[in-house]
Image (cartoon, rainbow, N blue to C red; front, side, top):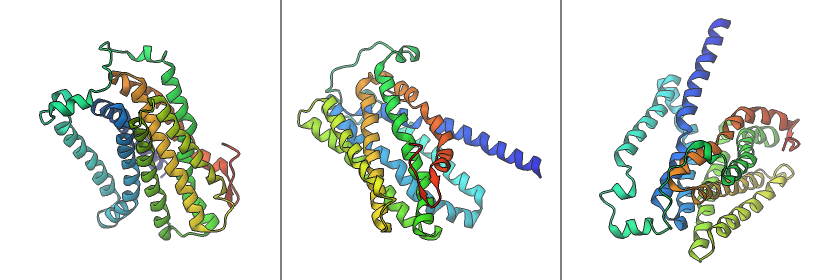
Length: 300
C-alpha cells in the first residue's frame, strides 16, 4: 500500500511538473502579444483584461469540476480541463498573426499599432538581459507582491470557516465575490494608466501613479481580521484582491514598456522565475501565518 501511495504521489508530482512547464509560457507570451498588437497607451487596459481571465477560470472551475467529477469521475475532470487547453492552443495557432502579417488589418489600424517609436532591430540574448536593471526591478516587484496574493487565496477559505463559521457548501458566493472584484480591479487598474497616458502623462508617471493608487487601496485589508461583520471582511479582502490585480496589470505592462518587443517575453519569463519559489512556499506560508482562530502577519 505504501509503495502504491508513493508511486501515485510521484506520478501526480510528475504530471503537475509538466503542467507547470506548459502553463509557465502563458504570461510571457500574452505580454509579448499585447506589446506587438497595442501601442503603449492601450497596453495596460489590454493586459488588465486578459489578466482577469485567470480569475474567471477560478470562478468557473469550482462549479464545473465537481459536476464533471460527479457524473463522469475524477479522471474526466482532468481530461476535460486539459482538453480545453489543447483546443485553445489550436485556435490560437490558427488565428494569431503578427500585425504585419494579418490579412484583415487595415493600413490605418497598422499605423496606429506602430505609432510608438520603432524598436531596435538587433536581437537580445538571454544572458545580456540579466544586465538590465529593468529586469531586476520587474522581478523584485513580483517577488514582493505575488506571495501575498497567493497567501490570501490559500488563507481565505480557512479564514471564512474558522473566524466566521462559513461552511464549505456556503463558501462559494464569498469566494466568487473576491474573484469578481479581482477582475474589476485588474481591468480598472489597466484603464487608469491608459487613461492617464491619453491625457499626455509620461509612461513612467502614468504607470507608477496607477500602481501607487493600487498599493494604497490594499492597506485597509489590515482591518479584515478585526471586524465582526462577515461581508465587511469579505469586501475588504475583495478590495485588496482588486488592488493587487490592478498593480499586477501595470507591472506586467511596465515590462513591455521597458524592453524592446522582441525581448518582452524573455524578460517576463526570466523575471517570473521567482514564481517557482512562491508555489513551493505558499502552502507553508499559510501554515506559518495561521495562529489559533485568526491569521497573524508576522511572516510578512
